[in-house]
Length: 103
Image 1 (cartoon, one colour):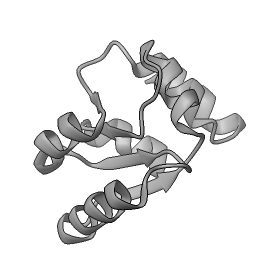
Image 2: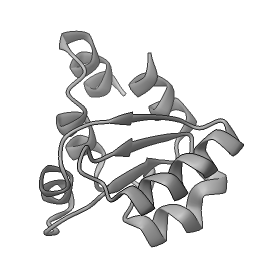
Image 3: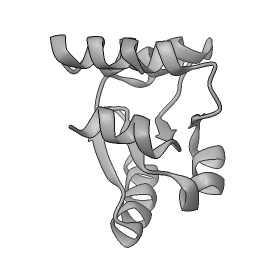
Image 4: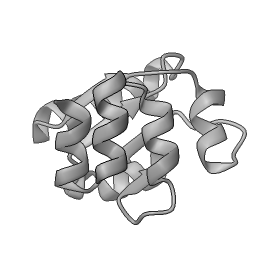
């Protein structure tokens, strides 16, 4: 959490924050995993180049469940975090970590 607070103070660089959190159980990524975990999600990071179909599906659920979200980076940048080619969405399942990213 100290590292998260330090990164948060400098600027909201979600990529570095998410890289630090990637091995925790607090994140899920990709449409299928995120939709499965949506009931336990507190914050979403969507790629700026997410497909319109997936964006509509996610935003409908996010609004329904009152989940905050942000657009940040592209699919390639989000994929780099997890060693994947492309990732269109990342879900933060930890309430504390989500609060740190939102504030």
